[in-house]
Length: 351
Image (cartoon, rainbow, N blue to C red; front, side, top):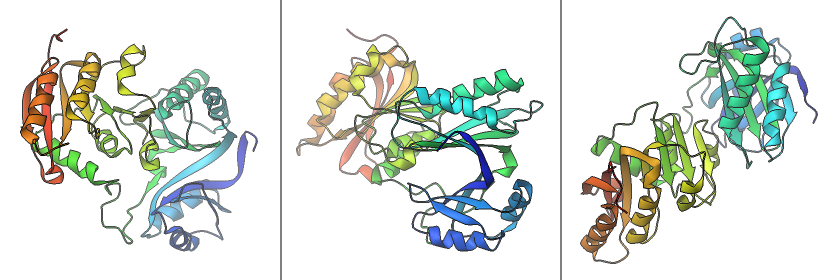
């Protein structure tokens, strides 16, 4: 593939995984013989049609569906690789887009599927700066009138620009137990949701979260719904659904190494659901405590390695007390065989 404009009216359609054929059928009747291509990740289809973009969007907005999630207009594409050079390639490809209108604010949203040395946030920043420089348009992050979408599938990036209401969001109802976007990756996700409610964790929308031992990403997914940015730290893999969340950054490293980086910044909350000895797990939280702002929230799951549960909890608190205070300890329904410790970072860390 070469960098260039797409020749046909093109959309990315997300749908319930496994229901791609049903999605084709639902959208077939809205347009004039649309064509579909299955992407590398289930639940994603590239759709082209004969109608112009405005006509297609109007028809797609009216059609009733059961399996369709998002419909995103696309106008350009470019090849990418795993290296940081790809970020500049994507930014340059944004020059091909027919907009955004410089008189209205815009926001860049990047959804990335695959493994790369760069993050979705890197792409959003580079594309946003290039558009501002090229058109004089103003990037807005809270209530943008226009969206510049960057949809990445490993070695190809698709780009599109549209007014915010032209990116269609439909409700998936077919064979779905959970509300759209709420299906848990695993039981751990349910656990954190309950912890947030029980301990009344105040997570502001502009906060930053550090999730250590994040794989496969259940806790990172929950945190991403509450805060502006999540660093999901784990040498292992994250679920593709978590990798595609724009405000989640996967850092493939051991948590202890973060303090040696100069790009980490300060976090408002650190969470730890690592399956390891409680003393060692608590020590890792002390190692990353300098990255948490004073008074910031700490959440740790105590894994009971033996039947001596009280001892495990006490040993963990003894280590945590060097860096944290104000502990609340308990169990919730979704981690009845574990304990949860919630605390706050001390103003001054013990040596």
